[in-house]
Image 1 (cartoon, rainbow, N blue to C red):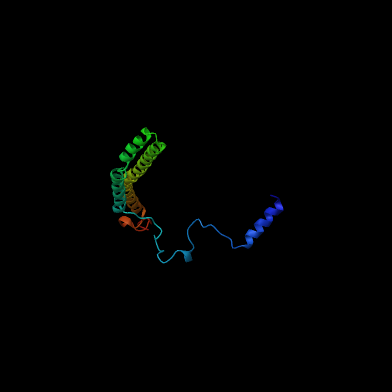
Image 2 (image 1 turned 90 degrees about the vertical axis):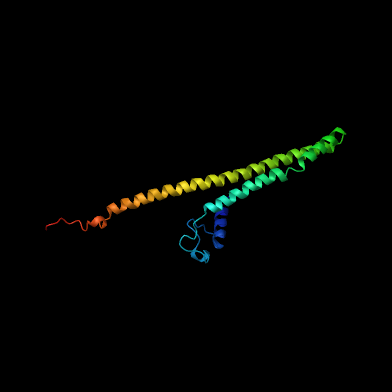
Length: 160
């Protein structure tokens, strides 16, 4: 691309409504009615995490019992067809193997979600307690530097 072509493209783009990136948030007009102090903060309760983990655990168990129902029959039919010389028998076995592999992947994902929600719940509880302990220590320390704390009053020497 020649330099003059680049300059033409830049000028053409500048004539259009420029799309600008905002790194620090939405403009006030785009925030909507729920915007306020702390409106953008992500909040999740331990109950929410536990519910997600529980649903993932139950789904994992249901997949094992309900999604594998046809697999033994399909494998048996595939073996029977293959021994009778039908190429479809091998294909049916392949589909069954593929199904089981995909099912195991899905079950692993559900188990991972369930375990992660349990882990997140415990970890965030520990983090919250740690932060609370440290913040209360900082508050106490700040009071020690506050001139009005402990009846110290002003710092002028007495007797003058």
